[in-house]
Image (cartoon, rainbow, N blue to C red; front, top):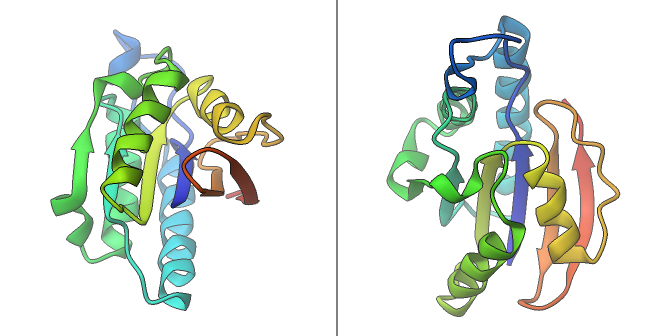
Amino acid sequence: MRIFIMRHGEAEMFAKVDKERTLTEFGEQSALRQGTWLKEKLQENATHFDKVLVSPYARTKQTFDCINRNFDNVLSEHTEIWDAITPYGKAEVVVDYLSALFDEEIQQVLIISHLPLVGEIVAELCGKNNVSFLPATIAEIDWDGEHGKLIQAKLP
């Protein structure tokens, strides 16, 4: 399974509640550029995302919207807004779900989430996390259902 783990784009510093923080203009542009890269990456292999998991926070949903624009909005039908991938979600829960998707022979997954969870997911899949998750960073992992290998980290 190929797993792409993305931290949301740069967000404003303050909002009434953390869940409502939105992307800055720079954050939106970074997410759009990362979406372009993802589409080119997937076209190299003539594949697509079978599943997209997005945190319910405003900034992750906006990041997804930027990515989805690059895919002509076809990712919506493969998307699940999931409360388990908010900033303080549990990496073990995410990996358990990825295991279920692996058993269903899902080939490619995109996760759009937050610090610290994105790093914890990489560590859970690969045994350690070597990725500095700046906003809009994407980690690409090849995972066999038990062990993961970091292929690359794409900075915005």
